[in-house]
Length: 135
Image (cartoon, rainbow, N blue to C red; front, side, top):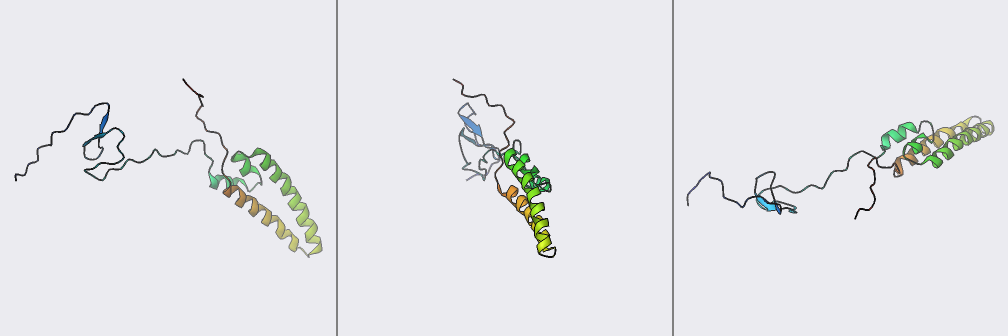
């Protein structure tokens, strides 16, 4: 057996084939992996475009409901803003009966709103224009 560095002659690349990005081996166009090296096809990565960040939504929820509006829940955000006023009033009312301990209801409400906005899925519309069905 003789050792050589000469390239192995392979079939030319056509419309039905592609070359391996690592070793250059000719593969079928829809190949998921190369049989000569470690290359594996990675699915297309999701971009952040059209998606709301959970961390930004939580930071915006310092004003209750604003994080929900950021994630696309406008009506729910409005309800949380109205609920914030209710939580403040209820906390003040409870504070008069509990020597001030009722004021602890207000930060509990704020934290609950932040926790909720972190857990819900976003409804932000994608920026890509939908062309609809094409024939």
